[in-house]
Amino acid sequence: SLHDALPIWLTSIRFTTPDTGYVTGGYGSIYKTVNGGVNWTALSSGVRNDLSSVYFTGKNTGWVVGFCGTILKTVDEGATFNQLSYGVTKDLHSVYFPDSLTGFAAGDSGTILKTLNGGALWFPLNSGRLTWYRSVFFTDKITGYVAGYSGTILKTTDGGESWIAQSSGTTENLNSVYFTST
Image (cartoon, rainbow, N blue to C red; front, side):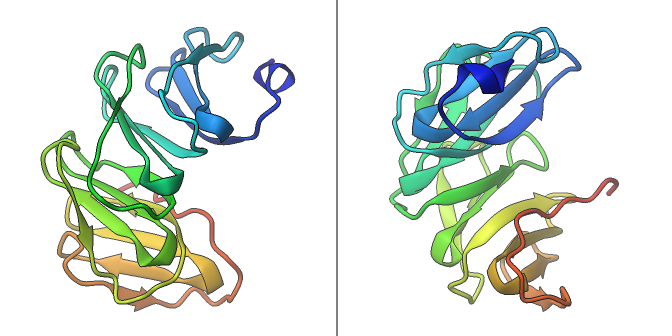
């Protein structure tokens, strides 16, 4: 199994088909399966930073985010990854694309990033808080949520221009936000 073969921790998984999937983990690890998880092959990320989240918008194109502001993009099913540079060095914990051009990443110290051109250029959004965000999810390209430390949930209905606090009912750290239907 994948877990038995790796001396690292795994952080995120995303399947593009029932057979093809990707996982990220510590020390720049990315693994791919083409047989539903029976066998996994190491991919070359080109980085040593811990990788936190993987998201694909289709069969070929995907993004990976991680520590020290790492953002990687593949357009060839993970055969190669290109590191994108945009000037933020905070750890990123989550990446999500509601469509092939519009994407969001979230991380430490209130970091929320947005791209409108498929990841070529990322710019920061102001959430008004310095909390650590662990997850980002958008139901479409204007309505989205971030969740994080101390029960923080924020919602936007304008593509991230403004954020409204939502009541979570807890002060525990939240690690994921997800909606089953939009």
